[in-house]
Amino acid sequence: MTKLAARQDGEDGFTLIETLVALALTGLVLSALANITAQWLPNWNRGLDRIQRSEMISITLQRMADDLAAAQYVSVGGEEKKPLFSGSERSVIFVRTALGPNAGPALDVVRLSETSDQGGLATVRSRTAFRPMPPESASDRLPFGEPVLLLRAPYQLLLAYAGDDQTWHDAWRDAERLPAKVRLTVRDSSNGSAISTVATVHVQSSAQGDCKPADGACNSGGPAAQAGQQAGAPQAGGAAQGGMR
Image (tube, rainbow, N blue to C red; front, side, top):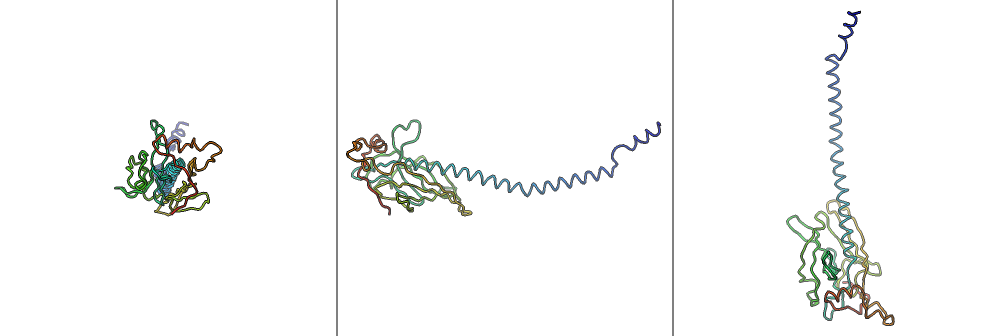
């Protein structure tokens, strides 16, 4: 019995050949896993990057849409009764209530435009405080500052404007009303893809232009007129359906 037990104890465990075979199989499995990981991991990272960029663009679009939706009907000043709003395919200038905890009832002139810097083309939001000014310098000589980067190449912002007739135009200037809707499209010039949203402007014309004398509301004015008065701007009235050029 002692000799049999000793013989059985000597046969337990792995032989050298079995150990080598097990190591070879383990190496093959690990090599296959490494090849598979090397193939799908870059695709995973690219897909994750696309999702993150799409989310960032969607958030940026929504912020710009909210900005434009708050556009106010405020005239430049003097005898000019048209609102300060100048829009093209790559740039838009409008007036809105100032943002910030200490802004108060003031008005800001906001510009969303494409510019270039050391990093290439970029879409930037800039602002300046609203003040009555001569009509000829309304949008050409405003001292815009405090730029905020919104988009950078290869992404480009394209704008379109529509009135109550729902017809889209590439520009909206010298109109007697603000556009009813502004379409914002961010296009990826590298692959041609695009994401769009539409901002609905809350106030399109002055309160005096839309009210009836019999209702007694013409003297009170609306939120846009009151904001313009508080900022030192005269009320704009007599607005009718405007045109584009």
